[in-house]
Length: 167
Length: 167
Image 1 (tube, each protein chain N blue to C red):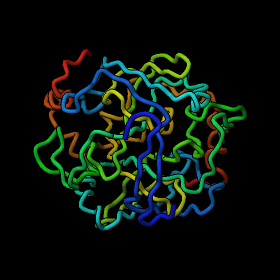
Image 2: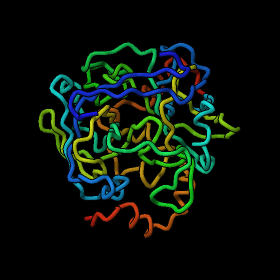
Image 3: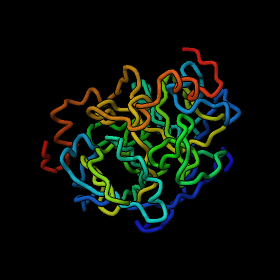
């Protein structure tokens, strides 16, 4: 693949199961999905790659936003009332529909991972699992742009999207 | 795309430029690439999506490991001497060759972002930019599995891969 206007083909390595069956009622981030359980089912041909994963408390899941419509590059996010640049949001309607969630790993049973704080639609195609490594993934003094200005209470209400929340 | 054994096609939305031109000398994570500058060049047709990005101190870049050979699902990572499951490592030879780095945003000039702590090979195809949002992306009390057992000094030496490091 050349860097310029090229393409790459990904295949799903598993499926993410959750209790979220309607996009418009799915929490928009794990922080708004506390207590929502889910399962990652890794296809048998990739199961060997799960060795040693039990030692990590959190996983970075990459998956396909397979039920999100493409959105314009200026988009009003769920948590705000003014249009923002797509790349300054986590909106699902991105040019490449790849989602990223940091979820809590509860247990592994063979090729099935029980996870918590799941903000992902049921039956979502899984692309990759990366271990969350505090030393790699927590930067020094990060600043969260416009999202830090959203009132925390309003963020909870909008982020949960009708989901009751079980803290 | 159905969840089962399906595929999705991604297209590059830009290019990442860096001073790293040899895979075997490229630091394996931003934490081992302190002081390494780079640039993200977003293609003109996606530039509008960069609005408001300046407010974020760090960005999550998703990109294609376009020069990494596919590796077996049990792999001895750069930082260790025993084979680990691929999904318990950040090795580039993954089933879907998508890389993830949390880099520091220094400046935006139009559709070019100056970034720091870059562990990415020059001319790497960019797939997505997501803002790093502390509220979303820093979990409670994360535990880093086998990687936490690697001696920090050894990790620095192996992680830099010959790169001098300018802390």
